[in-house]
Length: 240
Image (tube, rainbow, N blue to C red; front, top):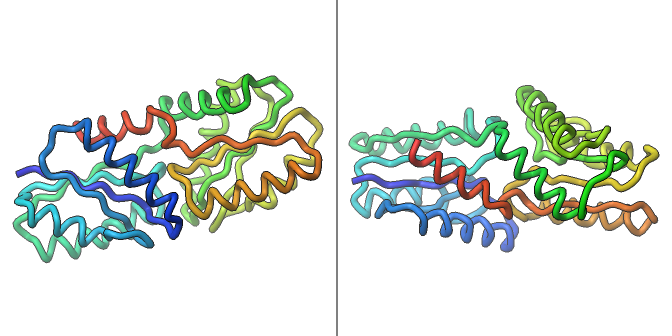
């Protein structure tokens, strides 16, 4: 019997965990597969091993693993395969198929541009964009974010889009925020390239609010899962 195991990153934030679980439940409601379970890599229960075991207990013989990750970095390339490898040894009778993360897709960039337009109530050529990634030591992440920045510049018709990271890569969010607020121009639009709310989103909100109190016009968009395109892409991944 077929099953689907969704894997999120996990967070210490109850709000972020709740958003992720609600998101997956909406996806589950749109897919006609009897066995579907959610799990997380870390910080949030159930972890991957528990979600996998629930699938097996419910009669699964084939498990499709759907990582809820935007880009391929260390978690996708190392951490999740390590956990699934140990589970394959424990359950050799189970056929495991792992789907790719979302990657840099035109449809996602379209969706992010729509989030920016909606939050900013229109965008002008003097507006400046700061894209904030989670961060990774994987050098491929920088190439991915360069493509994302160029795609958003083209769609929004703005002249400047910078990228920074919350951890494990440079420039940091503090550095990126400092640099972009020193540039002449209109508004600063911060785009958190994150799927769900959580502690990282809270950090962005606090620092954007601090800059706003200093008199600079600055706003930020919501997490990407607030756009319907992400839900649609997860469903498309399942049936590829």
